[in-house]
Image 1 (cartoon, rainbow, N blue to C red):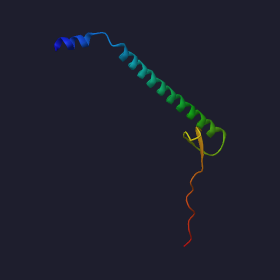
Image 2 (image 1 turned 60 degrees about the vertical axis):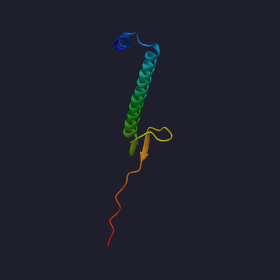
Image 3 (image 1 turned 45 degrees about the horizontal axis):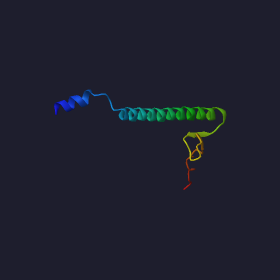
Image 4 (image 1 turned 90 degrees about the vertical axis):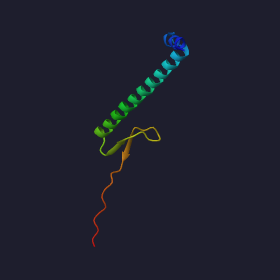
Length: 82
């Protein structure tokens, strides 16, 4: 059993495992890069909207892939006279 363990530990890596690991790394890197680009473009669009037009905006990705969503502020209800 020890010879099998030594052979397995010190043998060259199987090319399929190397390719799978490389592919997973590339996929993870691609997803993280897309996420970072999306976040930076969302922040840029939100700051541009806040600087150029009055109003309230939320920086979220909507169903229509809009980065900036205009928001109507909630006002407290008027006091009642009793």
